[in-house]
Picture 1 (cartoon, rainbow, N blue to C red):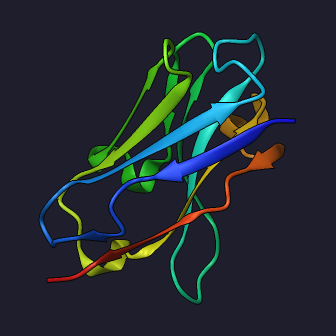
Picture 2 (picture 1 turned 120 degrees about the vertical axis):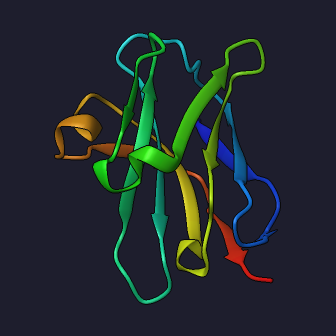
Length: 124
């Protein structure tokens, strides 16, 4: 059973950096073919793929947020992270970490496991 758990502050001030961690159990983030993604959903809007880090450490970013997004991992702790800089209230959303394969990069997005999501509000 694969489980993903998002964690981090639920409130971030404008202009600051949003930092989240996804802790994975039941699967290794270094196992061949696995891709680990961050996805967000603002209130009343659709899902937005932010980026992913693959089993070999390769990193991919969604074009709209590429300049502000940084994804990394700690293989010893079997977790991966998200940092989004210079946040504004428009970055308020539910943030999810997910497990998938290479299709998440090509656009077809085959996600087989999701975290429960964490609500992050950007407000002063």
